[in-house]
Length: 294
Image (cartoon, rainbow, N blue to C red; front, side):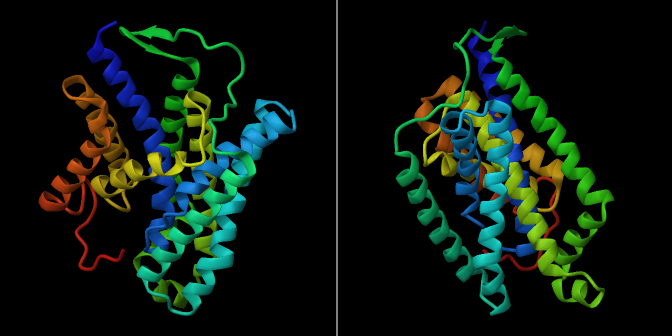
């Protein structure tokens, strides 16, 4: 096993986690046009929902995964119904929505800490074993499953946006909400559907990460920021672009460790972001836009 081969494998694994979270975030970003930072705690809610069902209720891992995805979906939908939709109807600016999402993140993260404690929790079953040797790198079965799930989700989200009525509705709302309403599209319903699907995917990503490296109440933001950068680097609105962005971020982080300290992993992410903002702000496959809202 070579260090370079393991670094590449770790980069691909990080890509898998980032791309699922990035796509779930992008699904919500497109029609709502604001950065929903509360999405980070939805990621954590999936992991802790699985922990609650599996460890506290003793219903097994399969039920835990279903319960975790359901918990994340409920949390995401409630944030839209209880906070974001009323703000949209009052004409709140993207900055107000951003601040509201930060407030939701802080409140929900503290509720998770209050309910489960700040110590590390685990939903893994069985003994920790040495990973499988694949082209000189070691990957565990759950890591291989994570990569496979990520590939499947990339194609599923691409097909959803391209070939389904909901996908067309989301793209119409993202392009022009007023024109979409004139054409009979219920923007609020489409956005709620985006929150449901995006939150479910974020919860699944949180569960997969927790199965690999355990969980803490702050786990969401650590994965969320690279995922957001992947969306920006790949291009908002492009599923292949987001996948490429996640691959770049994942490989840059872990190949960087090959030459420099692991403490630079987070810094590498934002160096890549700055380079793209200066050289190609629309990302790999995104379209140049006239106005940007944060």
